[in-house]
Image (tube, protein in one colour):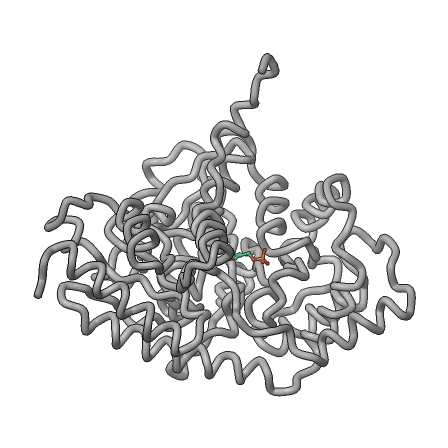
Length: 400
Ligand SMILES: Cc1ncc(COP(=O)(O)O)c(C=O)c1O
């Protein structure tokens, strides 16, 4: 082929979580009984009361382009949600509705980043952040964490890293976290926010797992810490995870009016607006409640308890109890150090091919000595899957 691919396209790798998932699906289609722990979406159906409102939107012919930033009714519903759940005051013009939180993050980055700006990302990180930053020609700067600090960055680490940068623009914080399940408390957020304020960098706070939080923990939005912090924060959220609506494609960003206005202008040239029917369904999701959201949360909590307890029974596997989201991240160092398999990708391929379980290699999240399990799966599947995981590991190092 004589047409050259752009440097931007060459820098972008396929999403590793989707790659594992599609390989597992292909094996399943070939009749192989694969247990899929790779998926990043609830295994529940969208609740009926939400589906009904979408059917009504179609019958009412609500099927045309809408305002690019989203219909006013929805932005008002989001504003109500922020007030009720997070004690945050956003006007509709401070809110951008995008086709997924994923897209909202990219439009915000496009609105604030210039080439070679630096964007700080705690590691392990959600797979898309680094690619999204590279897509806008900015540099991802990783803030490394590990199990001993509960996968949390701290203010001192942030301050030290900041001093070494030439053009820091933003920090992407994700709590509850994918892939670790870590949840930051108010004090930790206050300390981090203070450093961001001192260095005048934007906080992009991805709170998409806000509702999936366990052990009675409370979600705190970093934007609610003070008026000053509110002014330097963009909150990202969406309906995919809490309402089991991943395929409907709707997320949102809220923050300083000027940034939102610019991001909205960018969105208007790329996607026009979010699907009109989905927008109506999102109004219902945010304003009504039939108890199914809490039912899903409780079910996830039971599965989490079961999965993490079982993982910790496996010799030389250590896994901290995640406080939120629907992922667990066991440390697999012992098996990489004591077998012929030397990295998480090879381990996951071996487990998929020989033991028919799909899990995501830690290297996808920037940490090679871990793997990620999604517990958006039935207890029966979790039980059988952990057994296969244990069998696969045992035969690697010949533990009887
Ligand atoms: C941390 C995080 N942010 C954002 C998203 C994207 O959500 P959406 O479906 O709204 O694009 C995901 C999806 O996996 C995620 O894990």
